[in-house]
Image 1 (spheres, rainbow, N blue to C red):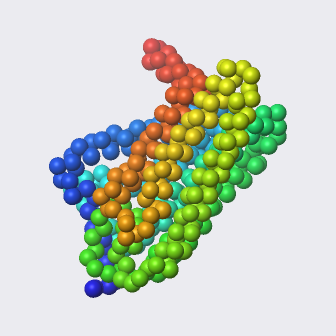
Image 2: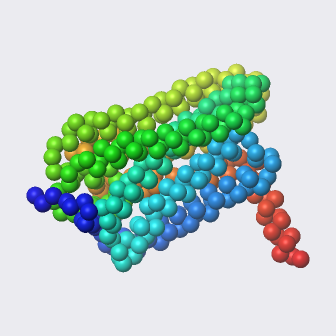
Image 3: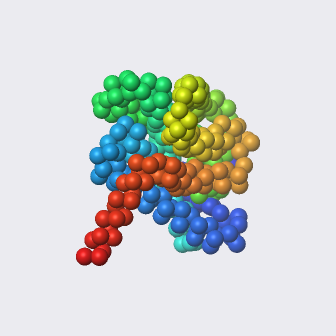
Length: 313
């Protein structure tokens, strides 16, 4: 097999060319979802900064989540839309490695940030009297920084391992962006040892955070059940339920893709799973948080009323 010359070799992203009859439909649907994700996550960031009642640790972390989702979708979806339009499907080796690094860093940072958000909910429900002491501004900034730095470190480790693997064969990637399982299928040599190291890194960044989140929710549920007021129980479950829904959507699709052996990885299934965590989850996050949260809905109503008042003048 011919080995890649990493300095000049380009990749051709096949995207969804296996289903040419679906490309137009996918283009329209993905464009709508991307616009919804962009507008929704931007709205959360703007509203959280405009309204003082949203200057809380929960919305501080939610702003970081929204920014992560904006960056994550923008790193892959515009290229997918161009590919579906049929005008350009090529990406350079350097561009491919850069995209792999960015998506891994952002995805890993979100894994850690969701743990931080679970800890915030644990402190709010299980330690309500000490909550303001525990979640002061400087610990919140530190936890957010750890999330971003942890994502960067994980991406450096996995991307570093990936670029040491020589790639052979046809320079076609059966995907819509440069994702690790697809690139590993082009390896010239046995990658068992490298994949084992990658698997450990993936397990740390996926399984460990998911376990911590589930563990925190065991304590949260116990604390909620001890609340004597039915209204109090309902409010606590609604607040935590939105976060748990996001966790299920994100981790479910990511674990399916990254915690299976490369030889079992199906490109067809993988592409649709990737659609879920690159566009569906970022699009749903704003709806999950805004439609289930009274403070955010109140802020939205104020903005809408203000716009209407200005329009009448």
